Length: 270
Image 1 (cartoon, helix red, strand yellow):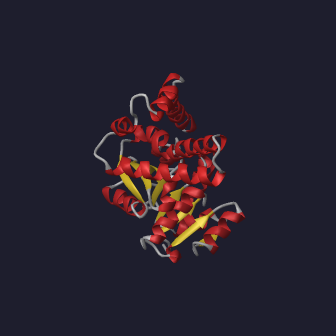
Image 2: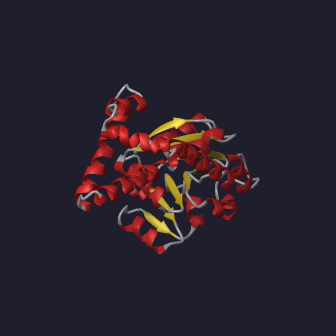
Image 3: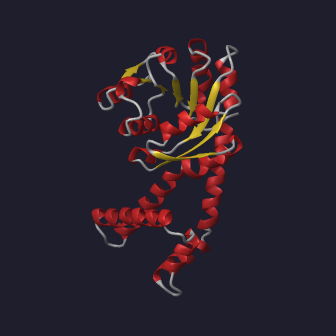
C-alpha cells in the first residue's frame, strides 16, 4: 500500500481533515490520495494541498491503509459496493457520514472479511485547528484502529470517544453546531445594520464578540448559565434582550432545533 490516507469524497469536511493532517505533519502530501467526481474538488486537492486527486475510487481502495468515507449518506450503498471487492480486509475505514452505522458499512462492504470500521462526527472548525470530533468503534475495530483515527483527527481537533448510539446526538450538537452560531451572528449583524451601524462595523462587533465569548466558555470554570448571568444586570439592556428571547421561547426553540437535527440524522441511516 502506498498511501497512508485515502479519501473518498473530497468535500469541505474532507478538506478540513486533510489540511489538519498536513499542517501537523502527520502525513505528507505524497501519502494522501483523494477521489471525487467533481473536477473542481479534485483541482483544489491537487493544486492547493498537493495530494494526488483522481476519479477512480478503486485506486484509492487498493492503495490506502486508511480510508476516509466522506460521501453523502444517500451515496453510501453504491460506494461501499464498489469499495469492498477492491479493499484489503485489514484496511481501516473511517466514516464521517451522518446517520450511517458501522454495521451498515460492514454489511455493504461485503463478506470478504471482518471489516475494521470507525464511525465519526467531525465539524468544520477543523479548518482553523479548533474542531471537535466524536468517534465510535464498530464491532471489529481495535484499540490500535482507534489510536490511528485519533492521531488523524487530533491534528486539528479535540477528540472524544462515545457509544455509537450517541453519534446522532453528537451530530446535532457539534456536527451541525457551527451553523447555529453562524446563523446567530448573521442576524446579530443584520440587527446592527438596522440599528444604524455600517455592515463592516456590525460584522466586526458581532464576530469579535462571538470569538471572545467562545474563549470565555472554554477557559472559564463558570457554567454558560453563570457567564450569562454575570452579563445580565436586572433591568439592564442585556436583560431586556434575554427576556424577549424567553418570552418568544427562543430557548425551547433551540432545544427543539437540535432534536430535529438528531431525528434527521437517524432518518439518514434508514
